[in-house]
Image (cartoon, rainbow, N blue to C red):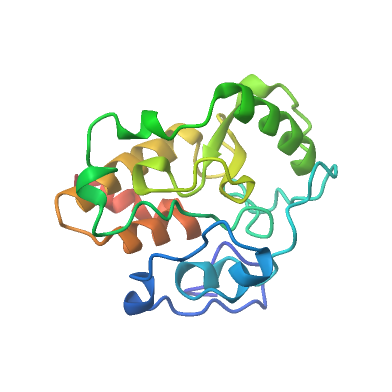
Length: 203
């Protein structure tokens, strides 16, 4: 169906994202999942089926959304310290993401657990990037499992981890140049990063 949201199964409607709501900086913070599900803005497109983080249950997350994450497992989460007003001292400062990036010991352990949750046949951790759905470059939450998932490095149906990296870097440049609101860039990444490919092509 024309205009259907690729993130959701047939029959599930996708609310229209409102720009004024997107400017709210409390979206998808590290609150209870029930509170997240009630949050407005970009969360509305991803949390219609949000449940508690599966916590290591094999096959708890669906691969049907690949190359995107399962929105019921990873709806996304943001760093409350990064707002439109603070981008000049946070994400737009060269090297800032190194100050908030979680240690490999944390992300590697989470990656192994989440590979099982997604039920991947290929369980080699080297074949996946433990990816921030809302990237650190746009103020994504660094350690929240709702914002981290094992993204395939191989083509899993329309894109790879490297393709997503290109888009998020292009969007950060636009945000820092004042050409795109932070909330709008976060929305693209949280809902479907492939929507940002035009931005990557015109950076």
